[in-house]
Length: 369
Image 1 (tube, rainbow, N blue to C red):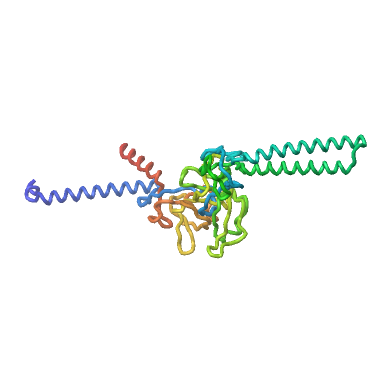
Image 2: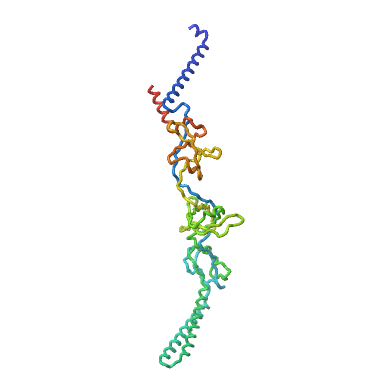
């Protein structure tokens, strides 16, 4: 007691040292217990993933411009005033629909006259034909009447053709553009009436570098994406590969056809294009698990004893987030994806999920003690 009173600081120092020693001893014992359980006090926590089979798509990216399957700017064949307009802006027209009618009063009258002439010439021909049967007329008279009848018929058909020229028809089915004429407009062959686009199929033209020329062939799949429909993917096929390579850009033009039944795509749209060269099943692992050393590639696997093993692999194609394994691994093999920089061959490692389980067992054992 006298010593405590004379040297209180010394006593406190002794107590602190004793406490530190006890804590150190307890830590050492805990580490020894972990070693006895086979994990090792210096085990590094890592995250692993198994090699798996996945589809790898070889594709080429490009930019293309949409075009209508058929497109035309409608005009009249003759000059005259518009008598009737039979369409509205943006409507769908079937092939043969009459869109605009021009004034045709004179041609209509000529048609009536020509029709009457044809009927009269036909009657005269039939009359002479009957007379020949009765031996009252000659073959020469019949030939004359036949020529008159044929001439009248030809004139009638010519007037019908001129009348048809005064009708502006849809040459194919499609979507009409803006209407540029009204009744009473003086229409000439150089005056645009409207546009007509067949957009049931979109022709997509895009350029591919010439080094891919040997891989291109009709029938390959293309996927098009438009900023107007970011959540949609428009699928089509390659129809034509240009016969020439551009000597300036060193690219070849490719044309694909994309079905457009919903009429979402319009001519002139800019589309991002992915040309699919191949779809293959391949063995892949996360790209971050690959360790490049000089000109070789390695991964870390975990042995049965819980140590890290470095294994050489051969890497094939790379896609965002994954790498194809050509040799060195098999499906189901486990590779380290996180914690790679903390380990080396022979390092003690523990998987992240197993570390949680071991800590829980240790806490329960301590509670029982």
